[in-house]
Image (tube, rainbow, N blue to C red):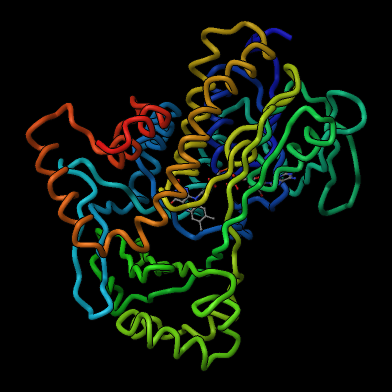
Length: 417
Ligand SMILES: Cc1cc2nc3c(=O)[nH]c(=O)nc-3n(C[C@H](O)[C@H](O)[C@H](O)COP(=O)(O)OP(=O)(O)OC[C@H]3O[C@@H](n4cnc5c(N)ncnc54)[C@H](O)[C@@H]3O)c2cc1C
C-alpha cells in the first residue's frame, strides 16, 4: 500500500498519543478515523484512567508544536522549576531542574490536555471520532479489526487501511500481534503501586509553592505532588505492595492515618480527606512493557504505551509517545510504503524507548532516596556549576527533559556526565 495522502488511516485509542497523531496525520492530508472505547469527553468528564496530572517537557512540547496546538495547551500548564524535597524534619531543599530560566517542566491535567487535543483534531474536516467503540483486536482475516459498540453491544469488522494502535499499556491490538507471533512481549511489573490523593486549595490558593514538583522521599518509598490550576495539588503515594511500609499494611483508616503521621507528618496536615480518599481511590499498578515486533506488514503499527509502556519516574511516557508521533511524521518523508515506514519506525524508536525505560527505572531510586544524600546534592551542585560554565556539558536529566535533539539512547550513553 502506498503512502498517498488520499488514503485513510485508522487510529485505535483517542488518548494522548492517538489524539495528537490524528492532528498530525490529518494535517498531512490523510482521512483519519479514530475509534475510542470511552465516551466523548466533549460531552462531559469520562473515566480518564491513569494519573490526574502529568509533567510535560521538551519532547512533548516539540510534538505539540508540530501539530500547531501549543497555543491551546500552554495556558493549561503550570511551570515547575525544580523538585522541592521535603525531609522528615520538615526542612525543604529546592533542587533546580535546569540552569537556564527556560529549563522548566510543566504540570498539566491529563483530562484537559486530552480534551484540547480531541477538540483540535475534531475541528479538522478530515478527522472523524467514533467514541464508545472498543477494539477487541485483529479479526481472523489479516487486516481487519474487530470492534464492539459499547452502547448496543454490536460486534463489527473494519478494514485496517492501515491502523495505528495507540490503545495504551494494555493494548488489545498488541495482544493480537502476540497471538499471531508477530510481536513478542516481556512485561516487568514494578513491586510498587501508586495511589492518588488531593491536597486542597485554601481560599483558592496553593498551600505549597505551585512552581515546584514536591517530593517527600523516604528511602524505599515516596509521596509526590504536582500543582493544578485550581489551587489544588494531586499527590501520589508510591509504596511497595507488601512489607513494613507496603500497601498491604494499610487496611484500616487508623493504619493509614498512623502511617502518614509517622512518615509524612507535615504532608498529613495538608490532606484533610486522606482516609476517605485512600479507600475510595484505586491502587494503580506500574511496570515496563518491552515489545519486539511493533507492526504487521503495512497494516498495523503499535505506537506510544501500546508499544512501550514505562514507569512514570522520569515523567516521560507521554513525552515519549508525542515524540513517537513526531518521528513517524519525519520518517514519512523518507518512505513511500507503509510497511517500510513501520519497519523503519520500530528500527529507529525501539533502542530509544528501551533507553528511556531504563532511565525511568533508575530515576525512581534517585527520587525516593538519592535526593536526600549530601553526596548526591554536592555532585548536583558541581554539575550545575559546570553546566553554567561549559555549554557542551549537559547532565543526563537535562538531556532527557530539555534537549529533544539528543536521543534517549544518546542520553543513556552519556551517563555519568
Ligand atoms: C501514575 C502515572 C504518572 C504518569 N506521569 C507522567 C508524566 O508526568 N509525564 C509523562 O510524560 N508521562 C507520564 N505518565 C505516562 C503517560 O500517562 C503515558 O505514557 C501516556 O498516557 C501514553 O499515551 P498513550 O496515548 O500511548 O496511552 P493512553 O494515554 O493510555 O491512551 C490510550 C487510549 O486508548 C483507549 N483504549 C484502550 N484500549 C482500547 C481499546 N481496546 N479500544 C479502543 N480504545 C482503547 C483508552 O481509553 C485511552 O483513551 C504517567 C503514567 C502514570 C501511570
